[in-house]
Image 1: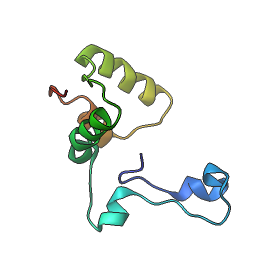
Image 2: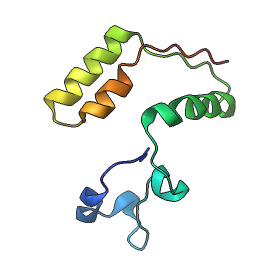
Image 3: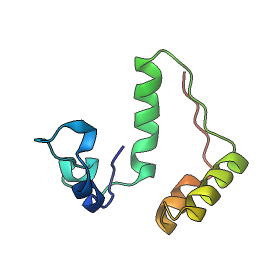
Length: 93
């Protein structure tokens, strides 16, 4: 999900194989800056409802492993890392 990221890289590919369509972010569509923190809870609640499943936040240790892998591959920013490592719990049904 593109929230508030640099879309420059999409100029090197045909996104989703659709040549006459572009790529956007939630921030662009809503006209305001958003972060993962702003959208994760509503997204997971909607996903959980739509697919009739229970969503759980990964444990801090697992999220830390994911962030470390993303850092190793140079695929994240300091802001995104901080947001992914926030120690919040999701309770969704």
